Image (tube, rainbow, N blue to C red):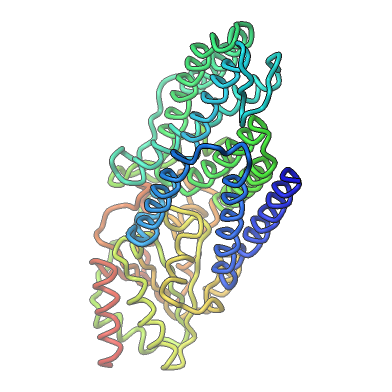
Length: 477
């Protein structure tokens, strides 16, 4: 009867997770999706704690309290600008948990094999199953790659480690050697008595950790949104592997949901960049901010600076305005000032819309979340495919802290590192105003000829202060 109740709880939680993912596909239903996901996780936790095999609460309850406190702190104190690195850090927690559970399960098998009956989740083990050993091996390997890769991604996004790709000579061969070494450790691991193979399991984890570090170190700053999405996928497959290892159906289903959705999102983002996942993982595209990539087509023209009052005058004459948010808006926390500007424009019966590129910011959906936080209506937020065709009929485009996603070199310079990448074609508008801190290149370090176009004006300064100045200028007009 208890087993039936547990399976029923797992089934309900799995359905809630599926409905959660479904709801998260739309901004209008995203809040409901979060609620459904949290409810599913609560049911899963309660089902686990009420199992008869759960006899010792001395460590489980304190762990739950600490975890809840950390989650509450992150939810209330971490700024949206820090969300990309937080997500990467949370992925590392999943990998670390999987590795620890994998080693604990292996040592538990050893205890049962030498006279006891303790295995994973208290199961009788008898003769050690090669399948179970393989599941533990896969769990530890994937978990270690996820853990170390996520830590490096966190450090890159935080700025502690340079965003420039580490392109070692023979890096692809090095990855292959590390991967072969991991699998080579599996042969002696499976041949020796449990727990004698723990050294081989540890050796494999060391090689997998180095592989995870090198894989992410070789990826440049411009690809970090895809990296975060891929690490999300890795964490899902890690959880699924742990589910097979522990005989937990819910972990298998949940991990598969996260892994497959993360993989699909990564593919979508790669298509938005006109690149393959293989190229992202091993191509080393992107450099750190301040290290510029020289275009193969000569840049002609000069940047023309403009002040807030003059931009306010342009806004006053415009009938159609498109706002393109980028990471600069996130860094300065300008979304609420942008919301005030949008309200002013709508009050003046100006047709104002927002254009979102799939890889804007440092996190999938980063700009959508910021705009939703500022209560900007969903119906005026357009994806790139839904607004690009209309930009040549737009009077004014305001680019707030974006660079590579509005770079015409992607379409006009075959030698550009972003050649072929679909971008927001803002230069087709009557006038473009680019708001950025200075004259340097963006995060990927790629020069942008948009800044030199005759119909482009540059408004330098902090995005929030510049937007607030525009609000004042429009009010005073």
